[in-house]
View 1 (tube, rainbow, N blue to C red):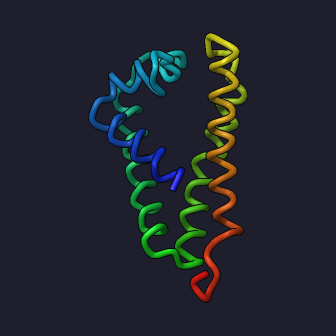
View 2 (view 1 turned 90 degrees about the vertical axis):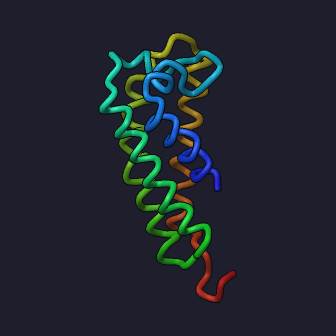
Length: 128
C-alpha cells in the first residue's frame, strides 16, 4: 500500500504538472528535484509515467494478491528503486540541509526495503 500511495502521489503530479513537481517535490518548499540540475520536462514526464505504470502493477497486486503478481510488483519496484537509491546516496550532499539529506535517504531506503520485502513476503498459496 505504501508503494502504491507514493506512486499515486508522484505519478500524476510529475506527469501533468512537471514544472510544479520539479520545483516543489516532495512538498513544503523542499524542492529536492530542482537541486539536481536544470528543469527537463521530458525527463520529469517520464518519471511521472514510470510512477503511473508502477501504480498499475502495485494496484493489480493489491487487488489480486497472488504470489506471482506480488513478487512481480516487488521485482519491478526493486528494479527501478535500487539504482535510484544508489544515485541519491552518492549525490546526497547536493541537498541543502542535513535534514533534507537524512529525510530523503531514509524515505528512499524504506521504499526499497518495502519493495524487497514483497519479493520474499508475498501472499501464501492458500491465500493467507
